[in-house]
Length: 484
Image 1 (tube, helix red, strand yellow):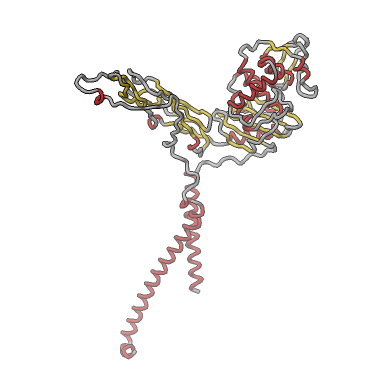
Image 2 (image 1 turned 180 degrees about the vertical axis):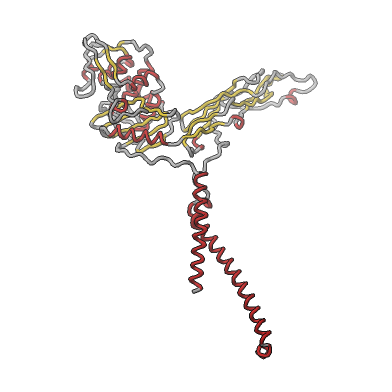
């Protein structure tokens, strides 16, 4: 019976303490831990990437580095190279025999003919909206002289952007030897292309009319193949534009640029279906825009004050006469995902090797740039915090005592990593704040401790009661207990 009472008391104590610590755990989790991210999106494509356009951060990726055939999303790079090499958009491009012959009749085209011309401006719309393959060849020949030379320009540009797993064999995206890319690389290329306002204007257009040409007396009406910007079941108001693609080998591909509430996303979908590439993109955009972002201080100016030496010749010897601390004029804030790991931030200081007097307070003497991985998200100018005039030795003091000679060699442009002032985000809560300890271990320890204390107190009281009872009996039967 006593054992049952003991177990019942322990259970009651455990449940009571469990309720208290469980409530504390829930309250603590609400206050300390970051908001919960949205559930992963549902999609059917083989490879997807969701990139934050401003920073280049990857918010979601599946098989983002897996080699895939790109199909006509290749034309994003084609348009980028054209925009970077041609300044006069009214230049007319001539369609050669190769441009026509290299375009299969079953592929995308706008029925151009040999000897026909278009302006570069018109050709860009024909390239991106209906994905005309003969236009991509004509643009390549106009810019580089040949398709092969233009492909070299495309590949060099891809490497410069960090798209190291991409190789373009042609400007159209038709099957070619080794013509491959990745979802991540295509997001990088789109991120660079949207820096050109004309490119954004082209991909957001639903329709463009090409006026009559030398061989075509009628207007050519070009419709955008991207259903995300056209009225219908797949229309998405956040989508600015994008580029579609399809071949039997690649399947359906799509790279999309979208904006919502001041944020910009790039979604890359490779190896998808039709209309799956559109439904997949919408699901990925919903996921990316649902991720909570918070304005975060990524640079604290007073904590980062590099100094630059000031040198002057003193009696024929080049000596350091002072050091000038440099400070940025402002802190830098940027919208980053809640719970962002600050160890991903990288700081690059560009400061001169040395200065010559005079130096005025407030002079701009350097700069600092802040990167997330390889993408710059902010920068600030570094200014002198004090003035330095030319040094004049005192007549009675030796020069060596007045200005110490130093042997200093500093790089002209230095890459300095300064993450020390950033407080790293804890990846996991301390053990004593874990759910196991708060809801199981701590209540058990408290209940057992309380029960033991209660048993000790009970045993002590029972001993006192037995002693008093014995004294009472002894007083009542003194003769009996005397002989015992």
